Image 1 (spheres, helix red, strand yellow):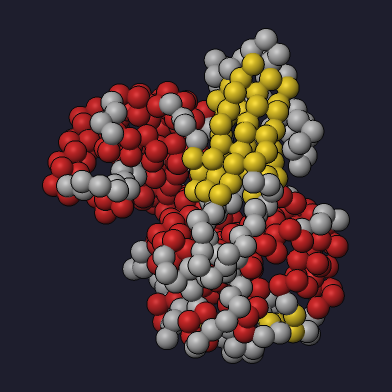
Image 2 (cartoon, rainbow, N blue to C red; image 1 turned 180 degrees about the vertical axis):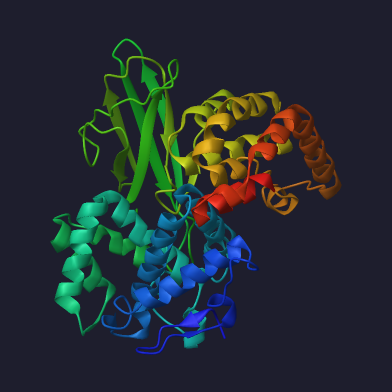
Length: 421
């Protein structure tokens, strides 16, 4: 008795995933109902009309359909908040699975009992692989690839290789390297460093990837990692047009660099002032990113970043430093004060999430040694009190202006309710 099941001709739902009334049901529960219903209907094509040749291809239908229902939900509400929530599920369930004794590839190569296949790795990491290919291709080419998949394989039982081959043929881009993601376990560590040359007006980004050794999979390979990125002028806050032949598409503001080796670098020209780089935008790959941002750069991204997920990620990184490394809260508070007035009117749901102070449980998971829960509790309460004092007047004014009943769209009303709360 899980969420629901996409039986051909008769979808079966747990009542919690199909019954909702806007008068009584919480916003989160309504979003879940919409998401699960969408998921099971999308299975009509990706799962039923085109099905799996064998159990080992389970991520072919589940990974792809999870990506489709996530994309659908992004169209129903704040896309940034949907991505924030999806990544939260990935990091709290799939990353620990990949780091522990139950680590396995998204397409496992053996099983004891088939029930054991229904894992966060098969579903959530499977969805991320599809998202990476979609990010690289862009919406138009990804659509051409899926059209080719449906054209070739309607009525057939197929494999992950068939899916990637059809996507490659339809889009005109060879994606076969992404099969490595399907066939090996582990969460890659992505280390990045930036160097600015003022005289040459160039900015160089160096990347390195690594995977923790796995006893059952001794020959782990480098995986293709689409790094979605942007460069901002540190003085004006304006976004640079990216000039680099190493980009998947040159001369764009929101770029994607396909990093598919153990180590590599990309250089940008025409960078007239010291830049602030935004990396792994929208969490463009399921990796652990290591990049040495200063507190000032994180505050800059809170104010100027045009990608909502990375704007939120900057707040989380800064708050984590305040709580675990005793950094000053001033930088965060000043950035929030200058960011919120505009964001409240544009995306109230995202505005509400910029106040996500990391939980005590999450903070505990980030401490390797000498974890003192009482100390973390005291520090977190002190920060909440400081935020209440510094932002109290703004919060009160904002609260009094918000009326969810004036919103015609459910998604906007949901955002207003979240911000009021």
